[in-house]
Length: 355
Image (cartoon, rainbow, N blue to C red; front, side, top):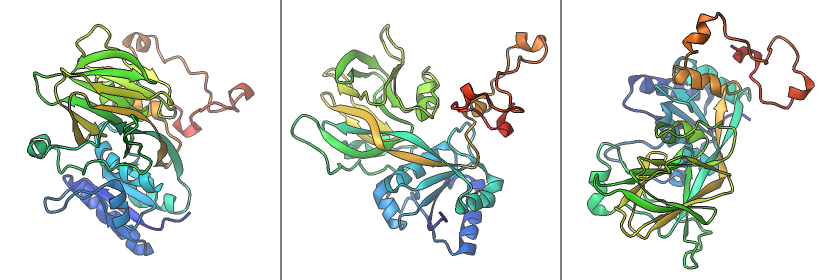
């Protein structure tokens, strides 16, 4: 279906992003397609909720992001609310979400406009909480220092059931992760962690991360968590610098919610959703994180070669011992011949992605 309206998210701190934005505007102007810049970080402009951003931009059906994965996440939080697709132009350094080289922007937009692009859906997380999160006024300037303008507190969803023990349902979608982290150096986050309503353990740590498979290569990975295929659904819990013997990641099924209850002796903690500060938790507060019904629609020009990108982004190399024996042994995947019947249902790379 042809593109009807474009929302544009630009990393204003990069000259290449600003130049690419001109190319997107020019492409839209040539076809009479409205193009509005959204989620603008400006000292004289307040940031808005995702639904407000989408509404102000006329509910775009395509969101184009110009920057790295952080910029992509800014666009994804808006697109997921209206079912729009997200096209990420790659101007970052170690990203997994962005897709298009900056020089290929017009060709990529043409592919989307003529239905020649691939749409890939990714799981997101949503949450409930004991109370609507907020950033205390006396702490806002300190907490937001160096982060850019803060988003407004998450809104409460209409289906919320406050008052009967289930807490309030929050209108958020995390493509990467929900993070609870300590605010003071000498006061760790102490929380009881529950999986599917049953206590797993009480943790004392610098931070606790609940991630999607897409987010497994972000903060969770940096803390020693596993890499998960973004094509699967799962809920990944990773403690960071935990003061306890059991400090391993737990990978739960997608229908197994993970809840954190702040213990009485815990320090105050910040809650971030996809890297954006959204509130502060006090002792006694709790949050529950679980799979959302909404999914983010990523635009791909070709089927995703996730493991090839993993190899490239982290500069993985073959073991020296293997290289000394000559060429690496070939995979059982043979792109130059038909796929056997017993392999026909598997996700295999197209011939152009074979290495």
